[in-house]
Length: 344
Ligand SMILES: [Zn+2]
Ligand SMILES: [Zn+2]
Image (cartoon, rainbow, N blue to C red):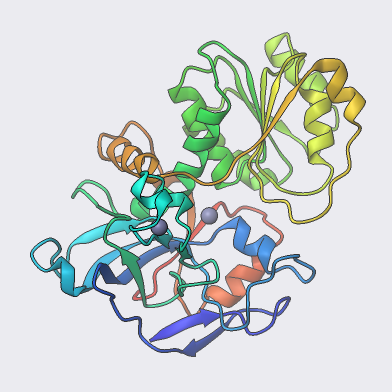
């Protein structure tokens, strides 16, 4: 099959032929119908990324597709042609964590598109039956591929312990920032302000429940702007960019006793002044991923149109154009979520 592989960290991806995936007994091979390009893939392939993926890695962990091959243990449970999205890992089902229902902490976890199993920047990938969720007719492949970032944001908002009526600041209006805004509205935030440097992205914010925007390319006093809109400082600050310096900025911006949720995957050292955080008694939370319930909830909410995903997709590209598009995303201008359609 055709896939976009990492040839060398720091160089553009390369389109090449690799071996087709084979379904294990409890696995499904799927035809990738849509795969989102994720900011963490961009971070992980920067020249000096601390945890570079090995040569030959196929990234792509936000995908939806159609069942192409059914594992031997799954006959009668899954059919060729069924539509699904899946968590980007396969758990063993037998270890202590799996038996305790914490599949995401499986001791033999194999990630998909994150170094172990070749991911969705390819024509085919494979998924675990346990990790797969059927897509209702009403949920498109594009929406199916958006379940992963929606789940990241859902998990982060749950971890923030957001209370109805609280004011929120989100740093970064990328796909995760917009998804965060949407869940903050869902859970009853009062003011949802988003700060973003790439002006093109600010146009999308309104549809996601953002009440006001701060154009950080023009406005350096984010704290002052927030106060102008809301009369106070944010109780909850989400960091959804992942570059050094932002944690310090979030500490400065948060209200006394505020909560800072670090969602952006920063892969460089960060320095901050603890005393400022101490004086305000802020809490800083680092959050990772999601579980299967989060995925199922996102699919259900997309199905009933209580959250949206299509409107954050700004570009749909072919596998052949992925290497160039991927490099272009390193300096975002107007793009938000880019979706690869390997069979388009
Ligand atoms: Zn992602
Ligand atoms: Zn396990």
